[in-house]
Length: 77
Image (cartoon, rainbow, N blue to C red):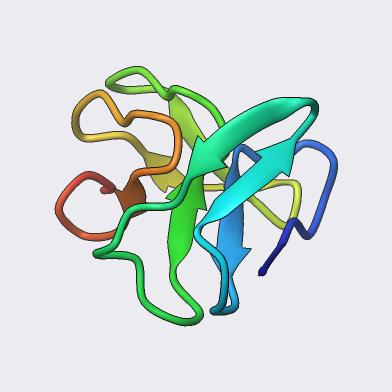
């Protein structure tokens, strides 16, 4: 289960449960490293692209982030 807080967001918040989800008719496998309450990519995010949460920029990608990948300090600055 997950939540998307704003239509502009390119990340979702993992709430536990199933890791194979469908978003916009696309199957996404949420990374096993994504813990409860942590962010994951709703789409592929390129290096230096803005990370959007609550419809606002919260940082930028430090490296390319694949769809479903955990978004945290290892790839967000």
